[in-house]
Amino acid sequence: MTKRALILFAHGARSASWAAPFERLRDLTQARQPEVRVQLAFLELMTPRLPEVVSALVADSIVDITVVPVFLGQGGHVLRDLPLMVDELRVAYPQAAIKVVEAAGENEAVLKALSDYCVAALA
Picture 1 (cartoon, one colour):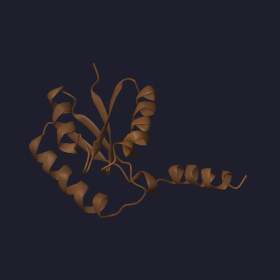
Picture 2 (cartoon, rainbow, N blue to C red):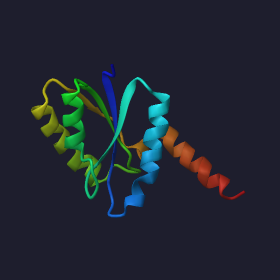
Picture 3 (cartoon, rainbow, N blue to C red):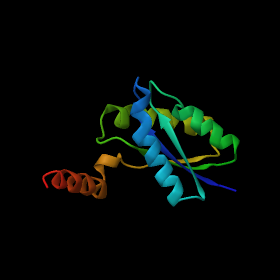
């Protein structure tokens, strides 16, 4: 049984098609880590929201949770909104270990991959 979860946390948008790349990222990640439950959660405008996802995971006895902000930068949502939401979730679910890593766009390997893509566009 899956005991760990990875939540890909994105902003959300009014257009349903906006979620497509995030769904592909979830599916690619899930294929690479079949023993981990990989889920999407959104800050606003789309569902599921982060509290719903965490609640469902805890209900399934999954309490080792890592949140990856799939944002290019550490803006207000990642610096202010997300920590407040996670603090509330930690109070609501004290049995869960919820870890939040840096925004994807702050990671050197992610930036290198984006740079590679940009440079390749010149070819």
